[in-house]
Image (cartoon, rainbow, N blue to C red; front, side, top):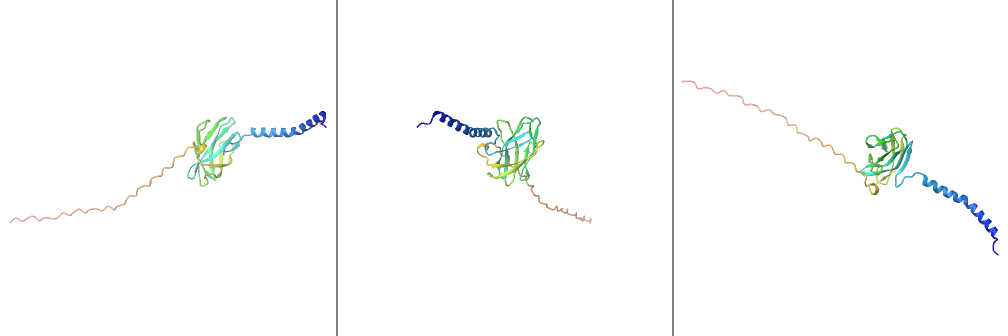
Length: 199
């Protein structure tokens, strides 16, 4: 015996009503995930006031040496600047000494991108091997300092454009000079020559 059409329509309505909250929850979760900011690749992200730090990573450029790569966006109306970066309590070298982050602008770190020319942050230390993770502390002129754990990557793939800083030129050691004592040469004393006597 077939099920009455009215009963079937009622059952379908009940099932649809029961599934509605589940489908709504799924749609909401998918939409929330895509709207959140994220850091692609291996970089990390952090925020400090109006500053947004994106895709931060360290790239090995030499023995016990690495360069910070990433982007800092300033979403505020006040300019700021990166004034110090340190890893494992060892300060890095900034070029320029204070890296500007303009109001409603951006600071590019490490390698050139479509957003502009990069500034350089170089770090040294025995804890800067590829595949390791180290903690960075970034100090700003206005915004609060930020500490993040960043991955250390080899200079391959997307990071081949990271410049290798020149090796420091060793200071030549002075050539030692031999201290030869000066000896005076004695001048011969004049000798008296007797004049012949007249006979």
